[in-house]
Length: 125
Image (cartoon, helix red, strand yellow):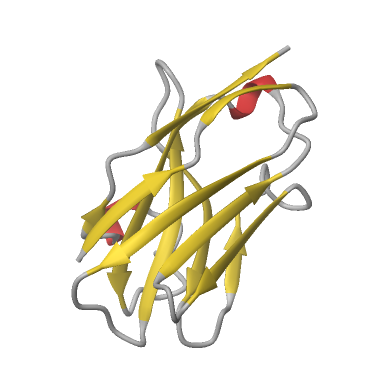
């Protein structure tokens, strides 16, 4: 499985941005795709995840109400719509994937085998 993230950029506080993740290679109906982010000097943190089959979504508290994860199964794309961006959202955003991740570990990066290269989001104040 290969992942290609795109859509990052420089925006101002309150702006919106949509990240895209193209998934190629073998995938499974049980695949989970997630977005993580890592700010300078900080640890990687979970942002949102989606199950391909059911479309179930999961969010970090910091993302709830502002970010929306979605997928286009036919195009094998996953999106992260980010609204009302804040300076603290500045980070490199990574998409990741693995099959059959349980609810207990869906927010942990170690549970994901496949990772994209990351796309930088910078939010100016």
